[in-house]
Image 1 (cartoon, rainbow, N blue to C red):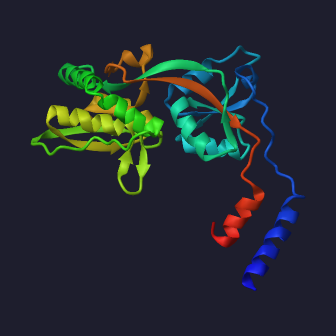
Image 2: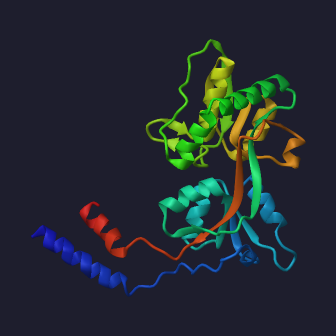
Image 3: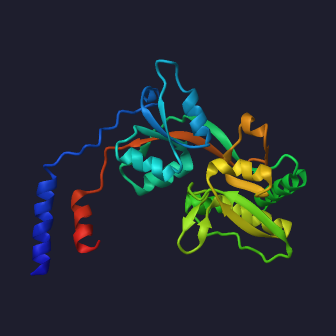
Length: 277
């Protein structure tokens, strides 16, 4: 009897919601050229913020809306508060896979490389990190890490060795999957965290991951609050004036994420809500 009541409520609710209208505007961004005069979400302190500021001419500028995290920008996009999000392709794919209401334009906005950061005066550490990165590639560790987090083909993780050396303090921002994000069982995880473990093992040092705002990482490394920064840093000439980059360990594309116009089945969504999925 209870099941019949729930199903009756389910179909009645579907009939009701089928007549309602959404306030979320339809997507109007189908190419990079469509960004002119649109509200575009960017993450503070990232190269996407810089590219957004340089986009277009006086009559075709986009309106950059700045967010602390990519998740906040995506929420604003889904709610119709902005028209698009400018971000790196790997994390964009993570969000798009989880939400059918998002899609990524085929055009590439910008190509760039990722590297770690070390203070200008810490040349010894820079050399050691670069040697560790070379060793990672030679031993296949690098490919195994990326196959795990991006390809989904392995369950590979770098184990943390016990060490007697000083702590290696690595600054990151755990808001940028698959490079760094939080996991209920394992804490902060991701490609950069695996690299940090490998580097710490190579140096014979224990590892401390320091989570902070992305915009604060460069200043922290420069001031000695952290030894190394690993947070999918794009290599730019401007940044290289104040910080040293390690050898790059990944290439990336800046892409445009928009609303797809597709939604989860109304029937399935309500069914899951009423019957517990």
